[in-house]
Length: 126
Image 1 (cartoon, rainbow, N blue to C red):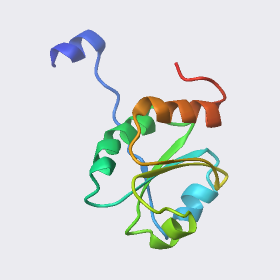
Image 2 (image 1 turned 90 degrees about the vertical axis):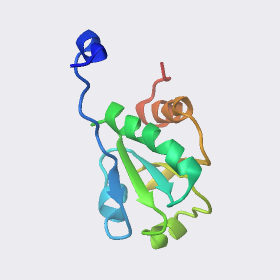
Image 3 (image 1 turned 30 degrees about the vertical axis):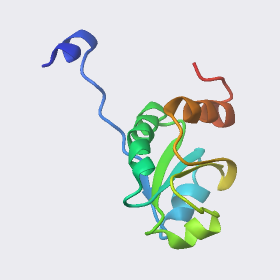
Image 4 (image 1 turned 180 degrees about the vertical axis):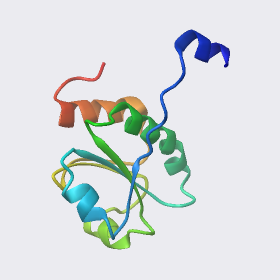
């Protein structure tokens, strides 16, 4: 056991974002009981790679309150087009399948958390 684990206890297991593609988009996003943060990314996209650990943290931190999902634009061309995704990364905030906010390009964790708190949880981020 490492020093940090001794001081703070073992870390909770990381929650993975839900993988979304053209085949399961309706089930995972449109019919979701929870609001959805959808990270639309593409292979070889540097800003998308920078956003990945932030999205992973959101999935763990908001587990059970917000569904965090990721969608490869190349594997989900139909829904990427329907959503009007013109570039990656694009992060969509959806409630009952309807977009309530959109972020195009890389932004930091704090901004994404503020949007989640304001749009989905009704409280300002701490």
